[in-house]
Image (cartoon, rainbow over all chains, first blue to last red; front, side):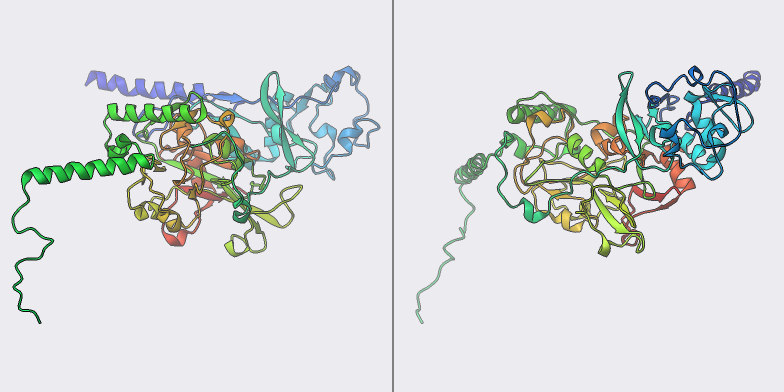
Amino acid sequence: MRTSRLALPAAALVVLLAALARASPGAPAAPSAPQHAPVAPAKPAALIQAEPPPFSEGIYPCSACHAEQKDRTRRELGFHEEQQSVFDHDSEHRWCLDCHDYENRDVLRLANGDQVPFTESYRLCGQCHGDKYRDWRAGVHGKRIGHWDGEKTYFLCVNCHNPHSPRFKGVKEIVVDGKRTTAPTLAPMRPEPRPRRPDEMRSPAPASGAGR
Amino acid sequence: MTTEKRTALPVVADAPLDPARRAFLRTAAAGAAVASMSACGVNLDDFLRRHFKELSPEELKRVLAKVEQRNRDRFGKETKVSATGARPGVEFGYGLDLSRCIGCRRCVYACVKENNQSRSNPQIHWIRVLEMDKEHGVDLARAESYYESDAVPRPGKFYFPVQCQQCRNPPCVKACPTQATWKEKDGIVVIDYDWCIGCRCCMSACPYGARHFNWATPTLPADELNPNQHYLGNRPRPKGVVEKCTFCVQRTREGRYPACLEACPVGARKFGNLLDPESEIRRVMETKRVFVFKEELATHPQFYYFYAT
């Protein structure tokens, strides 16, 4: 009886600790071990963040130019034409300093004033797009590759959406630090060739080295 | 009318055959069968082999080695052919987000590459992407699978990829006269290409057009051969057998995602264990608007379409 009285709180503690360990901030919630799965207590799935697409050439760190603080009122900029020309993110109401921090241009800024590094930009996106954010953390929105029952790589918002023009248009494959990842494009994607119609396959097969 | 007395019919012997003669006939018949089989290129061992599900571990090992040898002869390449079985406690489910798919066909060609399909003449695609009008919804009478465009998605259109739905009540399995196709414990409907006689009954039984026939010897360049193979999945097929999507059995039984899922640029494809309440596919089933294709046919697919928005 004594052992069982002790065992219960101990087990509860273990479960609690495990839950705490998994609830690491920043990363999408790791799926906890399935409680009803009949077999093999699944190992806590390791989640790996995909490489975000790189900044535009020579644009970072922003503080290289934005050293001193000047006018913070909303206006048309004389610079950053490449962003202003494509800017389509509730452009009627939003402008640079709604997301970029005024005091430190090398980071982003949440609505509550907290600073967020560019590497955690999904926290910024999630303040308005909470439904997508929750789906993304669960693996329903966005893309994951790897193992369905184990280690997987998850892509970030910015791997598919241009933050300045977030409606999805297309993506291209790029290599960052030797790792394959994706970057959003402003042009829509071109489909792969259509399948052949049956009547186009009637001609004899081209002679290739794949005999029976 | 003749009055000739008839004794017995000339073809049937009154007395049982002489045992020696019977043995001779048996041997002669077997010999003729062997001769005719070798004439059409069938190996006696293959012919007398037991059904895949009844193979002993040693027999299975021999069969797999033989497939690897056949690959070597045909492609001059080393391959790894496995026969990993279904994992207990796993039932695969596939989700496809119709509100995300842009019809780019990346999945189609990733599948061809992964699963060693015939590249051309016959060209075999296990996934077919249908283009439909948003105005009319899912309507096969208005679907177009041969669409061509410089850019997708085209205005006013949505895209509906179709592949094997891995039915829980598969009409194809019931139609097969040789039990060459069956449903595995984890839900994958598989084909033993050595057992398939190419009658195509399963193809006419499938309401999804998900089964494909090798009308000619598959054209598969040796340098494009995927060497990671499964006996019931992507091993190279001979002429005259039926093939279909297996949820990439060679990948998913090892815990990996299917190739079409990893190729999808928009993340519209979701895959996981339906029995795991924490899996991505269960999350889809519990929180999204989900439907199955041709529900009225009661095939009960393990492939689900959903709208995330």
